[in-house]
Length: 421
Image (cartoon, rainbow, N blue to C red; front, top):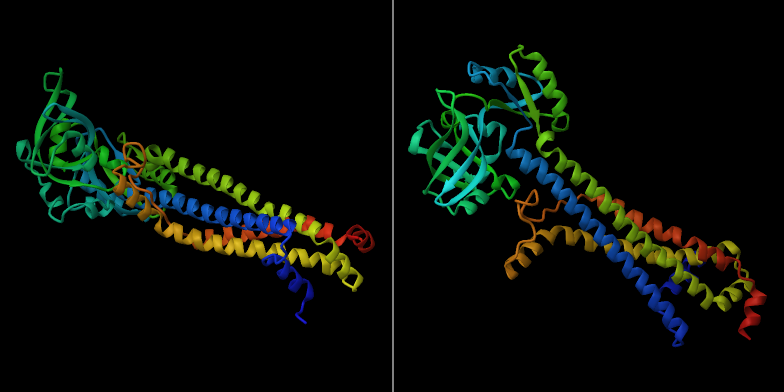
């Protein structure tokens, strides 16, 4: 005979009900529902966690891959920025550094006007702190050479280009309002630029970022303010403390700085909080599905009273009866968790393509970079999450079997058989 006996009987009970009476059919139906609920709960949680991991990855690798971890500024026009860049790059905490001149401006094309952040960059150093080159044509950055006036080139994000209705090769005007001219009056500076390339990073930067040469940005700013050195650190999450240490090492010449937490920190915290909240909610779904096993096993115990009594009269111990129903619930939990895990892995791998296909089919866009940090649904599968979710689903199912199994082990043979007569 199959050993151990409780496992053999439990597996038989967990299998298809062969009796044709209504109670057996109802027990089988509820058992199937509890397994399906567990499968869906586990699969859903894996997919949701993968999506939240994807948002976290896109923030760190894509958004912060383009934007620096920190920037050090100084309002003095006398700063030797290349020398300061080399000094900061020599720090052991700094991966790379590049000079930049930032100007808040307005872009105009015909009647269309939109605000944007203009960054004047050195094409030779910007690629060391930013992966913007991944989204550009090879010759685009090389076109950002000092030329000034209408001969200057500008690289726009796709969102900006769409707002302005401009294409590569066309011209736009950049306006910097309220700049001081030599007479001290408030006047706007205006310069024409030819769009040399349009980048699509899939992030909110497409809606706000434009790149020009260092000299062109300086002329737009009127030679004052906005200059700085962008930095990339080995330890991104410690950017604030590293920035403070670097500022203390610089001479007291009104240097100040900002790190990525001041611009993207709220987004990072929102992603972490959303991951925790969504994970908790989906875990509750798994718990509800797992504890459906309780109702299933309670009905099985009621349906099998006579079988339990016969087993007891044949010498089955209380422990063996207990293990019989624990085995049945464990099988339901194991199958549900494993099948749900497989479906969750498959869903995590294809969810981005499925959403893209739906958007293309119906001509809609669920995520837009002017509202969300990215304009597509990212996903990153982590096997540690899969193991955690599958293990939690199985463990909850196993715990849910204890109460009905204890009730089964307390069935009195004489009373059960008397009620069957």
